[in-house]
Length: 173
View 1 (cartoon, helix red, strand yellow):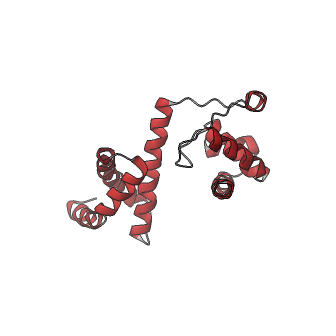
View 2 (cartoon, rainbow, N blue to C red):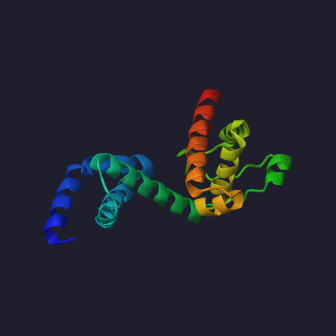
C-alpha cells in the first residue's frame, strides 16, 4: 500500500473513530483498552483491506472491530480462566464451567443452570459444535474433522446455536 492509499484509508477510518471507540468500549469496558483497540484495529485494517473485497466499509469495519474485541476478551479469559469440561462431572456433581466470552455476560449459578437447560433444547448438531468450540476450545477445522463436516457447516451450527441459546436464555429470564 503506497503512502497516498494509506492517507485515504486513514481519512476514511478517521470518520468512524468515535463509533469504533464506543463499540470497543462496549465490549472491553475499559476506556484505555478501547483506545488501544481502536489503534490496533487500524493496524489490522491496513493489512486486511488488501486481502478482501469490501462493498460496505462501515459494515465491514463493524464486523472487523467486533471480532477484534471478542478476540481480546477471549485472550483475557484464557489467561484468567482455564475451562475444563467433563460431561460426567457436569451431570453428577452439578458443576458447570463454560467459557463466558461468547455470550458477553458474566455467568452466575443461575445463568449456568439456564445455559445447561437451553443447551439441551438445541438441535444435536448445534449443541455438539458449541460444546466442542467453547468448552473444549476446538477450532472449526478440528470440529469439522471430528464430525466429518465442512468447516462452513460447523460455523453455521455454532452461529445458529449461539443465537438459539441467547433467545432461549432470554425467554427463561
